[in-house]
Image (cartoon, rainbow, N blue to C red):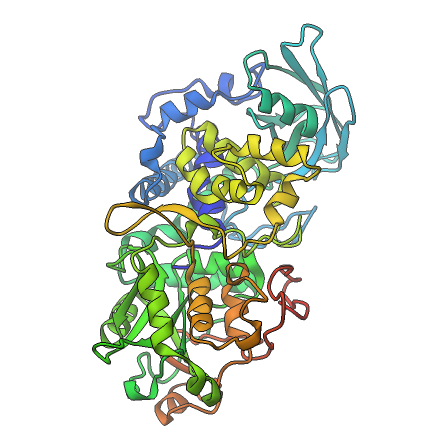
Length: 587
């Protein structure tokens, strides 16, 4: 699967922010024991939340960094938030909220992500902002006279209504603290820093204390978390998706990503003669399982969540579908793989996938070197899915790739917090191996990498937005159990590399990096023949100019087959503005 940016930031990285948030909401730990949260999270403590306490309470370790661990976290979210609803009477009756500061997040899913407001540099610049309740807010920070504490002050005033309040997360690379402000005035806290590391102190001196505002009150946040969990959980545990899950994902895509998938009128499965499918042809897939709709929202304009390529096995002459994916509840094999077409389409239909077939232009079909492309596949067969660089085809700019309320400031902190929770393997898999590749260093953690980049006059955003090179190699686990140094390829990167190995890019082959590609980049290339539609495809979906082979809902592909391959393509691509998400030439 194309587990794009947010399998990390929204699912795996839930551990970094959701765990303390859940503790705050629930008043109990994972074992049902009272935590004394008024002391721990209610603003009465002098300093930030203890990472060790969070990890201990929720039994977070590297063992959590698995599909099973993710399922447990999502189930825990469901249970805790359901308990909150029962104890409070019910969830808010309305499913969508508006935010006076920014209207660009319409639904409850992901509204638990805090929005960055301002920063305070110790003994330096303060930060100011306006919030829904308190119209004037200011944060300042100073080092204690003994150098062992960081004194943080938030002053709030000009309250909008008698009963309103604002809820914040104050954060550094070494800690987080929840604060709720109901009363005007100065609110002070003291953070112990005498035992922090050198890079943590560098972070505080350089980036200060960052203030993030929660977009909803605590009951609504519980609802937001519940709806986020229900968006994903059935897709992780069911081979065939429940109808309710598909309906929620359809609603999410329309509200958050401006993608409307109408029910198909005539048929669900379209069977064509496999002889019509040629090596090099493209298959685009969308599964309404939380992950693919999240991609459509996060990246903007992307209407598929997975991409594959048709190939002919040179020895058996059997038509196969080749891909880079992961083993899951609905897919039996992990990593870079090829599957006989009839078996593959059966599995795809059983997994509730929407599948479209995009045949190459005739001249490209004739040009495609199946045997050479298959050699590329065999040289990478069994490699793991491309987790090592799955974020970096997406992040090309400091801010222009992120959907509200995610920002570069929060993204900076995610791998740091994940390391603090003892999940260094997750941080390494998704972030720090890439950082080390870009810096030419080895085994640096997130803060160490940021500090090293700063010593070279680079910001953390510069480090994240650097071009991801095809030459970068990542240590990974092979399907045979061995650790190997090899290419890291998400699904569309693999398709791009197969096309390149097959000679489709000609003189441009060495003029761009496949690892910079996204799903959208692949299917918008001018490489497809829109005339090759068997009659059964026309009968099933007369509105489409391509063939949909599976799925209950009609898949559209805006900008399909519209962009010529060019030198340096894909390296500087913004998300685009809602709802059209138009992108500049070269993307």
